[in-house]
Length: 417
Image (cartoon, rainbow, N blue to C red; front, side):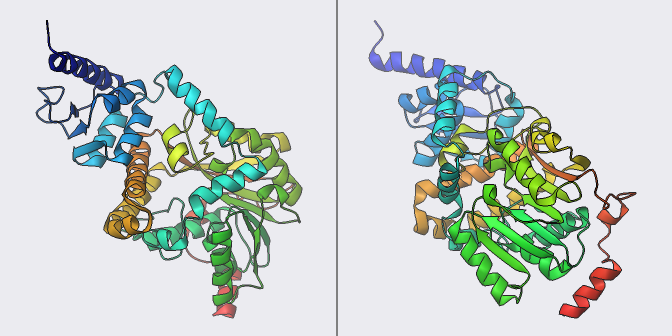
């Protein structure tokens, strides 16, 4: 009769094989404790995942994403080799449309209920992520704290240059003119609103439910002498009032939940009517799919990345015309690469602030996001739209790609300089 050690070894090998196949048999090895890795003949594997024991292994086999995320965060799973190469290899090998287990479906539905984006739920979800403190984000974001995909006009651009280019790109896409009124839904630490006012002479009302971010944004507006042009409002997007020439939302659609898209569309229509125009910038997918349950649990509660078709539920009921759609997926991969590099340099500071488990979770979130954008599991869409009576519809796209200010903007910039 085989002893218990032999039985455990056989069971471990069976689970390791099952796990390896379940994630698409990537060029990586998995092992339990000090045991021999599987597959044994994978000499050129990019990394080895070493699991502390059979309980962690069983959780991985049941739900690889949650099991790996929790195990890596807690230190029960270690990666021998490069974490980024490991995640890239797994996402390249593992089909995005893999059928979810009953356990994964049940957990996802539980998160849907727990993190519903009601007015109160949205405030709770945003507080969990964005009110960690500006000092944390200053460690690894750019100097203006722009926490959305940058735009790299050329591969060698710095993060600061790329974020400034992104904000200018947004302004050019909506053909922003001096004196126009703009409403921004979800303004972060205020960089885009201040850019629209400071570089284009727009009058901006920016809404956000993160108390920490609003305080920083108001302080920046005062220090930059723009408080008469920019108003930062601590309130939910559902409560936006007033009439505007343009509507802008950068990085907020992912936080609404599909069930609230019709509400957002109503807000847009009542603020810009049939003559205004706008831009939506958001993380999306090629096909409808649930957002990562582990990221929703540990990093971004309430998150949902829509397909392009799903996102149009915001615009179609109000007869908005889609003028331009662009996918900046590779730009977001590059943005995340720089963020992760800076995060790693600030590792000791992050651990002192929040502890090792938090630091490992955020490292995995950033590295996993890089892998998802590289593999095409995630996209970054920008949609430019306008009402049927808008007079700002361009003849060509030529001015979008020109960094040269137009005459009216030159006069404005000279006046404030």
